[in-house]
Image 1 (spheres, rainbow, N blue to C red):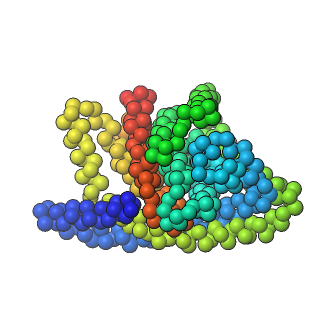
Image 2 (image 1 turned 45 degrees about the vertical axis):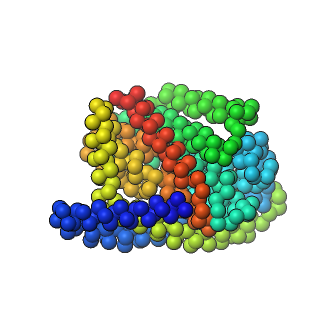
Image 3 (image 1 turned 30 degrees about the horizontal axis):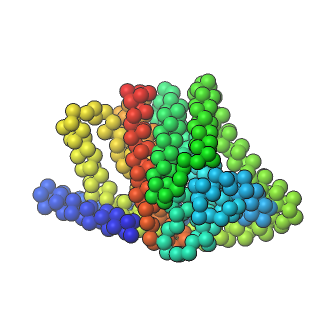
Length: 410
């Protein structure tokens, strides 16, 4: 229901703003621009779905080998103590916990193409446990928030963009992104736990979250000892080695269990193709709404209003130039990426705004895209508190990114 009203608001607000611009400012281009955005956004949605087809088929095929080879069940048993606390409605040792782990691990390594199909597989397994098929369950919402908060250890694509834009030290935003995304994820877990009345003050969760904090600190220290060129090579190599290791491990596990790995792969790949087709209408809906909102000029008006408010309160407005990236990120990943590149082009890759835009890009994920794709893949229409928790986690990431940027670069 919340997603429904947000989608409607995109169109109504965009239409009213465009009407005002036409009547009072004589802007005859705004309505053609909005209509053009509907066609281009629809095409983009289909192209995204088409592009996902091969990736979904590949990774759901690999996951099917892992299931039949027993790897997913092993992961489920190992993670059971933590996941029974964080996902209390999932039965202990259920295979979905292995799928959730694989998705989170892929996200942390910055492997978006692998994370999406693994996440869709997890959603399908959670839907099997869901008693209300049109309503998001508590585990689904917690899982979605973990995805939207965007915990990333190796932001490879952002480092590449900074290098292409001529940054003197492309990796200087690595540690700030790691810190910002950690706070975003931690806030998402806490906020969702409050909504779902999950008690985090227990030995298992305190040890897990504390251990995660130590791991993050260790990674920060380790990469801090490397020069920028070596850091790029190590991070890229580590991500791809881990990914290839997972594929080989799943295949070997299938062979050990005497599974016909080729047939298992084909079985899973067929599911990937069907999933890619199912998400097309949901992607078209959300991307068209976002496109119309942008084309009307509503986003620019929002930024100008925030800048005026900060100035009126006597605050520092250095961060405002980077806000388009932060505000666009929950709506569109490609849109936010464009805003980030635009900020580096306009202000400079090594400017405060350019660096902060990169931190915004890496600190959270595309909330509405994930909502549309993940819930759409299993037919969820009632999202309950998923939007609120996802956006609050995004807000925590934005605030953390601003504070950390001032600390490192201000």
